[in-house]
Each structure stands twice: as structure tokens, then as C-alpha cells.
Length: 169
Image (cartoon, rainbow, N blue to C red):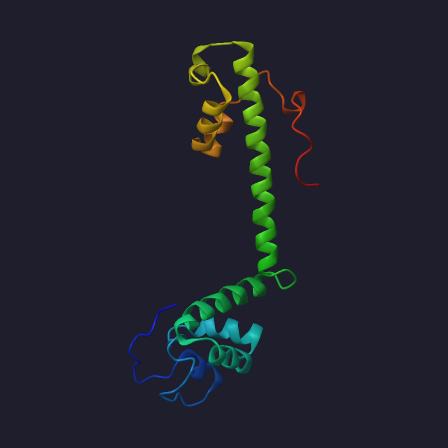
């Protein structure tokens, strides 16, 4: 979405879709430019032009663009997932976050077990420099998830460590 750009002589996307004349006081014009017809069509299909007009008139002018951006995102997601909409996307991201937190816990336990065993070979030379837990925790907080999987010990399995069940069922 674009901000308040000077208007051309053409109608805004809302007035074009609704087949009406665009007035200089059109509430949609600053937010739905004539090139944003698909965006407005989605918002109109999900929320209705009348409801969006009422909503925008109640929102302070400095917050209208953010409101339009939110409505456009919600409409897009709602059309892709009519049952859950944005909540489905949020739930999916939360599930992924829990999976990653579980994987990090597994990796931390494997690293602690490896350090406790005193094994020091060339493949795990980084681990031998981390002698205590605060350094290990700081190291793991800086290492990207994909790099943690490279530190996987060959003979270590997650079920050997008491980290509890996976955080989701």
C-alpha cells in the first residue's frame, strides 16, 4: 500500500470496482489507488465496502494507512484460509516455534552430554572450548538453527535425555 500520494484524474480502485464516481472527499482514494484494484476487491469481498468505509471514518487519519494494510492482509489470508484466517497462520508459526525450541533443547542436552563425557575430537573442537553452561547457553543463542543440526553427535539420540515430550501433539 502506498501513502497519501497526489491523486490523478482517474478514480480510485474502490470507485472503479463499485462503478461510481470518485469524489475529492472519497475516503478510499488515499489508500486504494487505481492500480490497487485486486487489493480492494479482496477487502470488499471479505469485509464489504460499506463496513470498510465506516471503519476508516472512525479511525484517526494518521492510523488509516495501517488499518488499510491490516484489512488487506486479513482479507488476503481469509480468502486463502476461510476457516481460520490469520489465526491459522499464527497457530502454524507458534507450532513451528515450539518445534524449534524443542530442537534447541535437544541440541543443548547433546552438547552438555558431549562436554560432560570429555570427548574431544576434530569434528567437535568448538564444543571443547565451552566448558560451562553460561558459555554454552550464550553460544547456542548465537548459533542459527541450521548450524545446530551440524553439531549433532553420531551416537546420541534425543530419547536418551530427559527433555520431556515434544511440545505439541
